Image (cartoon, rainbow, N blue to C red; front, side, top):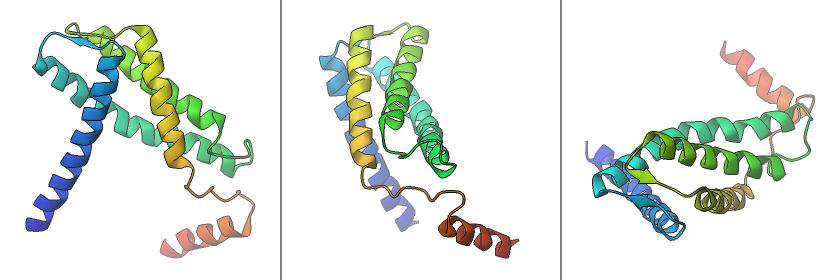
Amino acid sequence: MKTIVICLSIVLIILFAIMFFEFFTLKLLGLQYDSIGSLVYFFVLYLLLEIPLSLIVSAIPKALKSVGIIQSSKGLLSFLLDTGLTFAIINLLDIFMTHIKMEWLGAILFSIIAGFISSKLKEKDEEPPLIDSEEFKEIEKGFELRK
């Protein structure tokens, strides 16, 4: 029980730090809200939408790299997908939340900043193996042995 509480506390502190940075940046870029409750609700919805969707968006360039359609999973496509996802989520929440208002220019700037930070964090990630490489065949054999 102690381990769960410590792990949960660490995750909550990290999420709170990210949320504070995002709030400060969005506030500078024109985020307007009616109450603290609506602001908290905005960030909770933003995180609940962003976390699973970013996992999907991050997988797309890696899959395209594996099949040889693109040369790198860390390039312009990854940046554009991350930026587009952030912009779409902010605009979606802006449309459906009447107590939150975000100017489109601020949303674009925030999305570009978030996409840039995401691309910098992905620089150290390993590239996925090509589908016809020996490394991929070894991974595939490992899955066959588990069946």
